[in-house]
Amino acid sequence: MTTRRDFLKTSAGVGVGAAVGMGSAQPLLGAPAIRRSAVTPVAIASGNGLEAVSTAMQVVSEGGDTLDAVVRGVNIVERDPNDRSVGFGGLPNLDGVVQLDSSVMHGPSRGAGAVACLEGIKTPSSVAVDVMRYTDHVLLVGKGAQRFAVSMGYDIEDLLTEASRQRWIQWRARMSNTDDYLTPEETGHADAEPPFEDEDTYGLGILDSHDGVRPQGTINCNIVNSDGDLSGVTTTSGLSWKVPGRVGDSPIVGAGLYVDNDVGAAGSTGRGEAVIKTCGSHTVVEMMRAGMSPTDACLEALRRIVAFTAEPRLQNADGLPSFNVNYYAVNKNGEYGGAAIWSGARFAVSVDGEARREQSAYLYQRP
Ligand code: ASP
Image (cartoon, rainbow, N blue to C red):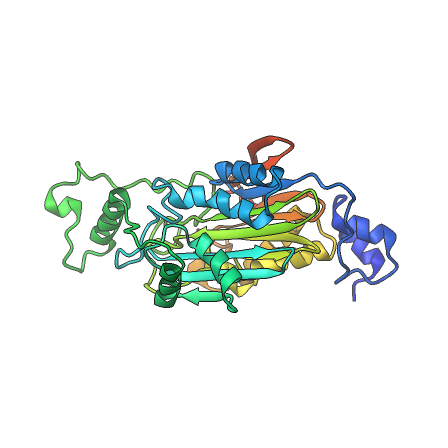
């Protein structure tokens, strides 16, 4: 069992843990966070969530609920046809069908809701809220999730934009030279159809994989209000070109999102399989409960991913993960942080009336 002295040695910063450590003679693992009297509200999101954190803060500053705040924030990105990693305009699975995953957690009521493999609904995070509020379940998938959404009044729409359809057609053509789809080089249209550049603006996604750079992306957004109440949401179109039916970490409570109103909230972007195997966001929250600062908690959860990456196909020449994972966390006292396996990632944060991007901490410098 960790002693108080061990804890104080390993705890960094003046986070929740330090507050707990100074006032308690009890063993610290599992101790609830001590709440400061005044909390400065903070919203934190993945790097594609600058508008989302601004909107979320606006909602809580007007007295709105923390979950309504983060969902209103990510709805903007879900509806944005230009964000190819979330909602409308998200890149499709290998059949060219957009399948969306999302989960939400409401700290004060200890509520959770999620949908996976949801087709045809632009705002899966709102459907996840409805699963939480209007059913006795936590997770609905596929056709059942869609039927539930329609029953709640959502419209079924085509989520594939022309740009994402073109991107998928090009992937299909170039994927293999042993199938019957001709590459632009073979059709003589290579000049007119240069390969898409898979830029990874905010370091959200994968570095490289067995089939080259694989576009990924997601939005996670977490918030704490001035009462110390927390909520979080994660929403995504998931891994591009995925096997139909594949579910990532985003709709899995404890993997792509976890909120404990006594401690903090955390969420992830990046290779979902690695996050699921290590119960990632739950691990981050448990590390904060044990006294780590949000940034240190994120780094510790990432170290577990590195330790769990045993497959040579997922390792680079140095034996390190060839993919990226990002965590974003905020604790009940309004301290926040983000970290990634590889350097160069950024997160969005809104605090003290300003929304900005900050560099994430990291385990390894990108080569
Ligand atoms: N985590 C998402 C998934 O695995 C994708 C991402 O964030 O890049 O579905």
